[in-house]
Image (cartoon, rainbow, N blue to C red):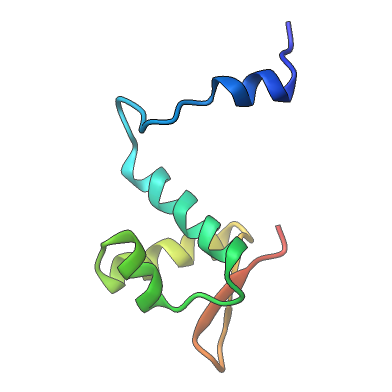
Length: 83
């Protein structure tokens, strides 16, 4: 039986899950950054996620692979992708 979106949203937990998956959490946080900012630099992403710049770069490359981010080669920033 399908629940309405409102009822599902009302049940969304306010606290972190008991067994968080760090890589998924990081990917979702970067996607949120891409949604609210015009462009994201690797330095900003690594600071936001509290990870090394190389880790942020690997994450951005994976998001690019799936069409969720694109890199501006001239500015060396990332923006939301076509997906």
